[in-house]
Image (cartoon, rainbow, N blue to C red; front, side, top):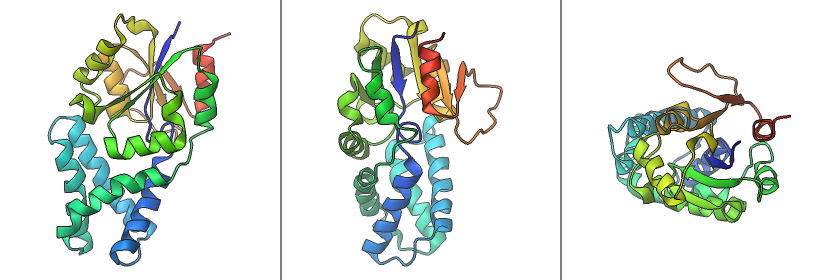
Length: 230
């Protein structure tokens, strides 16, 4: 019986792509950088993903991710890299301006209140996530919020989950489910922590065999079937 859910935020409870697109377009306009086409955003997204995966492998620091991705992107696009740090700081806040829920996520987590304990587990920055969780209403529904920047270690590191479990007190890992869209941080993290994993995979991607996926869903409503099997 599952008593506790660890929810990822970006790409799971909230549509990160929509927020990213709106933030980039707004800042390109603010800085007078020309048109921020969807193709341009896609190029940035690929660079961004590469940096986050390097962070998950422990190759670089969070700071190197946040500024480094924009330096590389700006270099490729012929934009002055001296604005990278300031651009990133504004970008963190802009990310919280656009709230698009995945599959009625707010209604789903509200309906689970009192039935299971629910916690946010996210590698997103404190600046971005605090604003998102407040404006979306998700933060007030949760029993707790764990952000890697505050814990000093990221998913999928076991150290991240050790700190989460430490806050819980007594833990039965067979009763804890992590739900997330990222194989490299959420599913691998769940595997490292020895808890039940649920891969949110609306795009129906293929997963490498190295990941132990206990449940795979394409819609968040399917969580009910996992929690309350007939």
